[in-house]
Length: 383
Image (cartoon, rainbow, N blue to C red; front, side, top):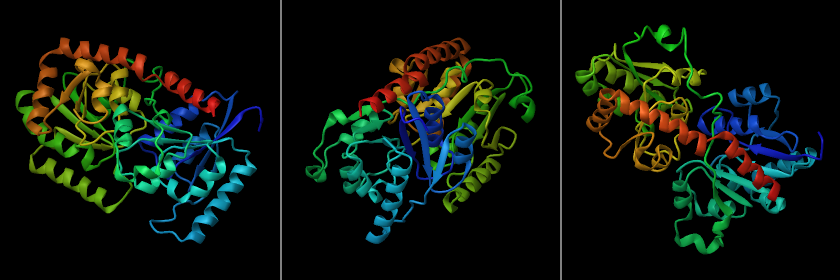
C-alpha cells in the first residue's frame, strides 16, 4: 500500500446489504484512490463483503458484536484486536458508517485522538454514553438537516458532552447520476411480469418493514383501482434482517392482498439488483414511510425523471424540495389520502412529467455523488 495515500478504515456493523451499506459502497466506488486507500472492516462475510471485494476493496473481518452487556474484559479484548488492525494497516482515519457499536470502542476512540468520523443515518435512539462518544469524533456527518436537528436537541445529559455544533455537518447521500438517468428499457420488468404497456406502475422500493408503509400501500391500492383500473402496484424488497418480526410482516402483507382480492394488482417481487432499470419502468415511486432519515429510493427515482410521493416527515421534504418540486407530500398518512395523491398524478400526465423533470434537476444539484464525495474528501483532508 502506498503510504502517500491516507488509509481510511470503513467500519460497518453487519455484512448485509441495505440502504446504509449501499451508500457506503457508493462512497467507496467514487473515492479518489490517488489520495485515499479504502479498507473495510466487517464482522463476517456476506453480501456487503462480496460487493466490496468485487470493487477491488480490501476487506478485513473482526467480530465486534459484543451484545447488549459485554464484560470489561470483552471490551478490552476487542479493542486490542482493533488496535492491531489500525497498526498493521497504518490506518489514518476511521469512518463509522453508522453509530451502532461505537460504545464498545471507546478505548480506540481515545487512542485515535480525533481521527474518527461517524455517519448518522437513522432515527434510532442514541443513548447518553453513545452521544458522549460520538462527540469525541472529529466530525459527525448527518444525512439530512432533520437528523442534524434531532441530534442537536438539548437533553439533560448534555452537560457531559461539551457540544460543539461546528463538528456536526450535513452531507446528503448522493447517487451516480450517470447510472440513474432516463433510458429506454427493452425486455425489462414489464415483460418479465407480464405488465401491459398501457398499465401504470406504482412502486415501493425498500426492505419489507412496517416503518416503510407497504401495508398502507396495499390498503390504498383498493381505492386507487376503482378510479384507475389499469394500475399495477409493485412491492420491491426483501425482509429486513431475517427476523421473526419481518417474516410475520411479510405474511401479513400476503394475507391482506388476498383478503382485498388484489392478487392481480399488487405484487411482492422481492429484492432486485437492477434498480436503475426498474426506476425507468415505473410511473410513480411511493415512499409512505413512518420515519425516513432521507429517502434514497426517491432520489434514484427522481434521477430517472419519475415523480414521487412521500410522507411529510423527517428528511423526505428535503428530498422532494420546496413547493413539492419533485412530487407530492403525504401530510395525512392514510390509505385514502395516498390514493388521492396518486390519482392527482395519474390524472394529470403533464404535471407528472414536469415534476419528474424538476426532480432530475434537483438531484443533479443536490444529490450528486460527486458533490457528496468532494465534501467528504474535504473532511478527510482536514483531519
